Structure formats: C-alpha cells, structure tokens
Amino acid sequence: MTFENYQTWIWAIYALSALVVMLVTLRMTRNWHSGVKGFLRVTVLVLMAMPWYVQQDATGPLAPAITVAVFEGVTLGGDGWKRAGLPLIAVLSLGYLLWFAGWWISRRLSVEKEDKQREPHNADREKVEPSMDGAEKVI
Image (cartoon, rainbow, N blue to C red):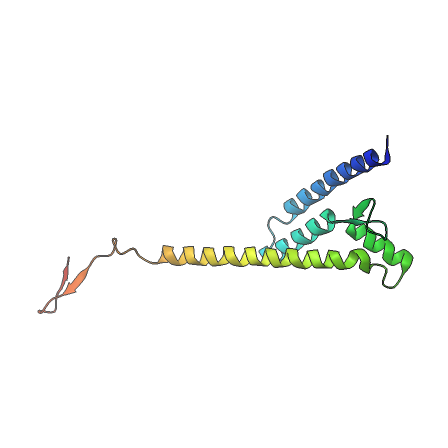
C-alpha cells in the first residue's frame, strides 16, 4: 500500500471517530440550555473537523488543526502554535457567528409566531356597534 492509501484509511477512521464524538455530544447536550448547547456543539464540530497541513510549506499530508497547533506549540514553543491555531480560531469565530445568526433568526421567528397566536383573528371577533340608547348591538 502506498502512503496515500494509508492516509485515506487513516482519515476515514478519524472521520468515523469524529462522527461518533459529535453524536455523543449531540446526545449529551440535548437537554441543556440552547446557548451552552450551541456553543459546545460548534466547538466540538470545528475542533474535530478542521484539517491543517502538517508540513511548514503547506503541502503534503493533513492532520486535525488542533493536533497540529498543540504539537507545534509544545515542540517549537512560543508562537509555534499560530500556524494552525490562528486559522482554527478564525473558523471557530465564523462558526460562532453563524450559530448566533441562526439562533437569532429562529428566536425572532418563534416570537413572531407567538405574537400571531395571541392576536385574535378579525374574522373570529364579534363586531360590536354602540347604539344611541347606550346598549351595544352585536353585528
């Protein structure tokens, strides 16, 4: 087997493992508050799914960006983590922004739906017309 075949198999196993971790996260957070639930789900998804180049010249094999950032931070020290860490932070920020936009839109839609349900329909309301003698007349 060639190196590319090994890498394909490794990524397939990693993707399956990441899927299992994501399913466990979804199951674990299903009854949590929506803010904490969304934040944790986006974090786990981005950390598990974002790949980055292992080599310095941005070619060759890929690995999970969190792994590359941690190993480069430990082995190179100081600012070594930035090569994979900064793009990871950017994608996390984008994920949080998209999650917040979706949460805000769904919240607005649910508030509008509740307002429409509270409002009586014009066809259901009885029209009451005041008369000259003080009694109200139902039309």
